[in-house]
Length: 165
Image (cartoon, rainbow, N blue to C red; front, side):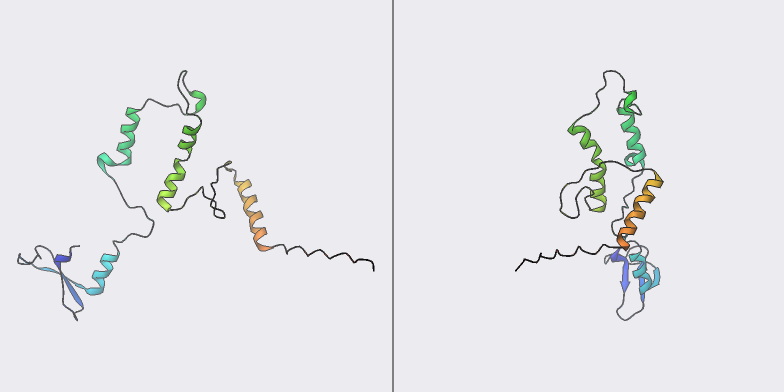
């Protein structure tokens, strides 16, 4: 939508959106007459929701095309470390840790929240393991729900011992 094509008269409930021309030096041709609120609704419909990724790439820059180029350029990698061919180097130490932390960097960029930053103290957290069994996950969540409902009262202050007089 171009502002140079919009014609609005103050006090009028309508907006005219010119199809061609619309610039001051060109004679405007016919346009579409739209209710003022409808034109505002059309503009607002184009504004994405907050924190929503809307960049789409097609053709050469699409993810599929980039992935195919990357796959063609890189040597074939085994599906698991046990299938690693002889003489192939497996990254270790800091390089391997950097590869594993790429997901955290991506989440930080997209959601603007550091997934490995402790919400209480701000220190760095690390992943200890992944729980994938549904029964174990359900058991942990049930335990956490019980803890939220029944909070333990604080312990009583110890009573001082009576001294013999």
